[in-house]
Length: 102
Image (cartoon, rainbow, N blue to C red):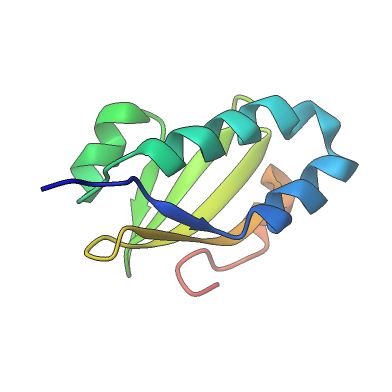
């Protein structure tokens, strides 16, 4: 089976974030490029690549960015290889949301 990696929606969310948080640009850009090339078919594939990632209910994953200064929450449709960016923000902003429903 030939795979083409994950489709990530939407890069514009990351672009808007790193305009205000330039220190996150390099790591978010790296995460984006890795995700596009990844073949994540389950949570275990992500955990093997990102040891600090956390699984949530409803196929959501939280990634620590910049040593935990920022949090990236995504929802993944594994069968269709689609990653939806649901939230990117500071750790303090993350603490104010319900990451399992956002």
